Image (cartoon, rainbow, N blue to C red; front, side, top):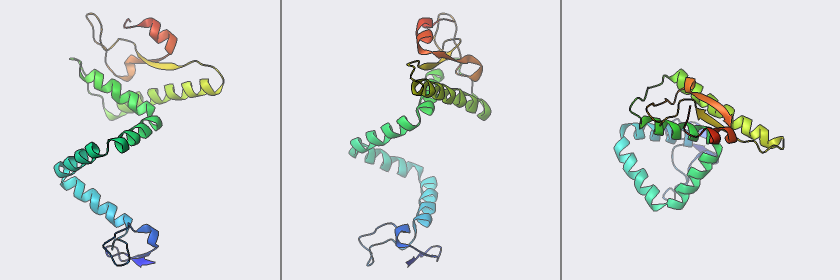
Length: 165
């Protein structure tokens, strides 16, 4: 048991980060207080933190790749949403979505992921895609990455459609 120097609560030692410089080998404040302090510091020092993070990522490419890959495998629907959002921002006629509409788009991607997983668990090899009814890039027109322009199709149907309406 150890007392936190910030909140003055007595807590288990596993709730403190390790510190080689300290006589007991632990930081003087608990993980919760440390997290609050770091969040406040990062909010006030965004430029310094971004530089540090960029340097750390450059020096630890394997760890960064593994962490990114793990996140992407757990959040495929969010990754697809951001990928399509990035592509749609390149369009001249990009329309900003409000929070409710963004959530609708995320729900569509989540529904697509759920359909694909249910199909695979049922023994079927049917994979589903989220399709833009009006393609983002097309001859003489430009669709939006918005809930009213999205539909869920089988991968086969979506690939047959190509870049057409």
